Length: 286
Ligand SMILES: C[S@@+](CC[C@H](N)C(=O)[O-])C[C@H]1O[C@@H](n2cnc3c(N)ncnc32)[C@H](O)[C@@H]1O
Image (cartoon, rainbow, N blue to C red; front, side, top):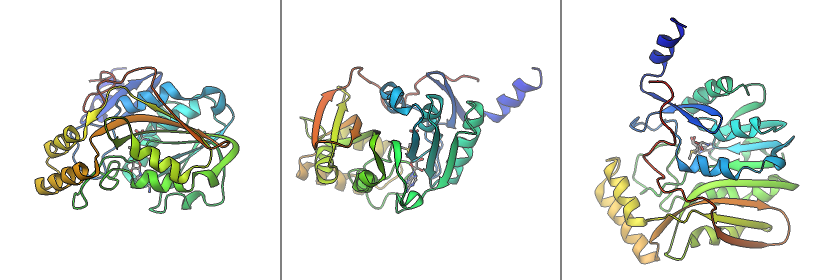
């Protein structure tokens, strides 16, 4: 014990070990400002875990695109998945995820493959029973040098667009998809997400919307506060949003399966009121 505690304290210096449900997950700190940051845990991961369909995960072949620290894949493995295949483009995230697999006792249940810009290419021709993702979703001006995990085009929808485009091809007939994401919309709701669902999906979608939303302007202020982009580019994005009638930003979970084409939108059971810049739980070891 004398040896272990200082060893862990040294190891965890400048990193964050979070406790979420029954999982222990190592990530970077919030202020790790580099393109290869391993995403800390926030309300979005809690929302995903709260919505995990345990019965459907049982014995399922699971796919995650965008592994990060591994938190979602680990939760699926712990919930009884037969096997999890996870794709990631950030080498540093893959290293953290490997550590987290061992820490949570699921190292024999998850295979990590290199992600590619062409999202589905690494699993071409394969189908899965439970597909999960927390896609990069931060609206980011084109000139902004931003994190791997976050940047996804001006409205943060580029990754999700490619993801939904080929989702049906990779989902088994009885399969289920669970996505947690944040999306722009107007004051009524996440209309840009609903447009994408309408465009790409032929089955049954249920969108759970967190009742707490932020305005698009607040989101842009937050981006400006990170000092990672030119103020003029962020302002240009604000202007574009104004013209397009984009005023709000919503945290959502999407459940999807094959079947009759329909989309239902409803509020989430819980309200997640602090979604960014606040850790889900206190540090475990400091
Ligand atoms: C919002 S983070 C989510 C990470 C983790 N699943 C979580 O919930 O904390 C999105 C992740 O997608 C990864 N990513 C981005 N583009 C990718 C791609 N083309 N293929 C696979 N992963 C990708 C990022 O590096 C990042 O780790």
